[in-house]
Amino acid sequence: MRVILADDHVMLREGLRPFIEKISPGIIVQEAGSFTEAFALIEADSALDLLILDIKMPGMNGFQGLTTVKTKFPKIRCVILSAVADREHVLEAMRLGADGFIPKHLSGSAMVSALQLVLSGERFIPSMLMDGASGVGSAAEKSGAGDLLGRLTPRERDILHLLREGLPNKVIAGRQRSHRQVPSGQHVP
Image 1 (cartoon, rainbow, N blue to C red):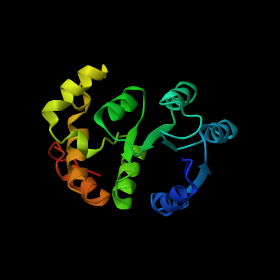
Image 2: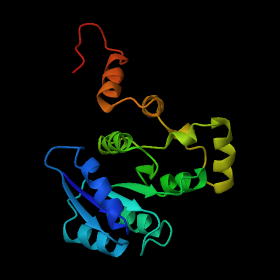
Image 3: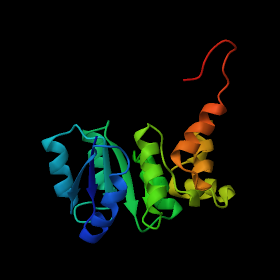
Image 4: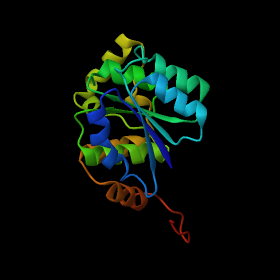
C-alpha cells in the first residue's frame, strides 16, 4: 500500500507518519512539502492508494489541487487535512471529490480509523457536521453543496455515528457484521 502525505510543515509530517504507518503492514509513506511535489510523485507512479493533502500549503490554491488530482487520477482516494474545519470547507471538499476531511485537531487513533475507513471505500466526515445536524442543510444550501449528510448511505451514517463515539475500527466492523440481515441458511463472512 502506498500513501503520500503532503503538508508544508515537516514537523507535522514527521508526527503523523507513525500513525499512518499503523494503517497497514508494509505501508509505504512518501512525503511532499507542496502540491507540486505531491503531484510529481503521483505522476511518477500513479499506483497510489491514498493522498493526504493539507489544504493550506504551497501550490494548493484552495481546493484547486484536489480538483486537479481528482480530474487526472479519479481512482486515487484523497483526504483533505486541515486546521480549518468549518462546515463550508468540509462540504466544499466533499462536493469536489474528497473521500474524507480530517481536522488537524483529530487524535492520532481517530485519524487511523478515518483513513482505514476511506481506504475501505467509504467516506469520512468529521463529527462536527453531526453537531446541530439540523443546521447542516441550511449551511449546505448557502454553500451550494446540498445536504451532504442526506446523501450518505444508511451504512455510512451508522459508521459515522460509531466513529463519533470513538470506537476502534475492529469494533465498528464487528457491529456492522452483526447488524446485517442474513437470509436463513446463509453465513456472514
